[in-house]
Image 1 (cartoon, rainbow, N blue to C red):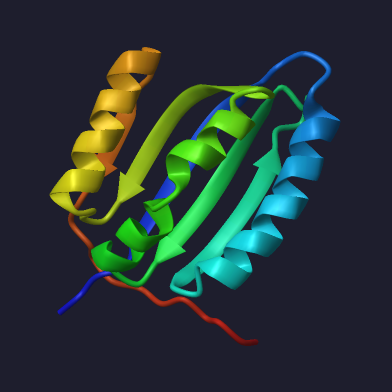
Image 2: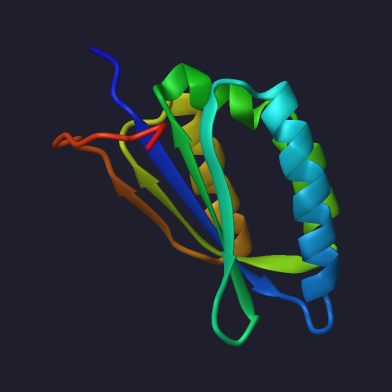
Length: 128
C-alpha cells in the first residue's frame, strides 16, 4: 500500500525580499499546478514578522514526490536569490534518492532535516 508524504520546507526571507518571494511563488505555483498534477498540495505561509516562509507539499506516494522534485534544482536557484534554507521536514517515507538528496542539502546548508517515516493514518479532504 502506498502511503502519503508531507514535505515542509522552511526558509529565512532575505531583507526586503518578501514581495519578490510572493511574486515568485504566485508564478511558480501556477506552473507547478499545471506541470505537476501528482502534487496534491502546495501551500506557502509567512510567519507573523515576514522573516520566514514555509512551504507545505503533500504527495500520494514517494513516486509522486520524485516527479515533483524533477527540476527542483532550477526552481531552487531562483528562490535562493530571495531566501535561505532554515530546515526541512519529511512526514512519511520518501524514496531513498529524495531522502539522500535532502540530507546532503541539509548538511551543505547547515540546517536540520527531520524525518518522521511511520505513517499512522488519517485523511485528506480534497473537496468540502
